[in-house]
Image (cartoon, rainbow, N blue to C red; front, top):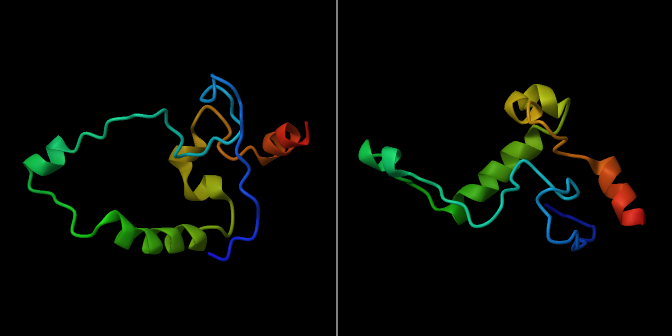
Length: 95
């Protein structure tokens, strides 16, 4: 994607999942379990691997970047915390 920035590892202590700095819609404590049993039971199977599927998924997400993300992703917007707290992250990094 032509990213020109710096990825900064954050040491937010033992409670890293209770601190919103660095959270995203994809943040989840590890390990987690994804149960695909129902999908398998009805014959669903992946026709493309993760590595092959990601470029198209990233391209689609980038194409959604124009406009209000909350209108485009209302389920994520309904989460009880700010998923993209860039002001909070900037304040944390300034310390």
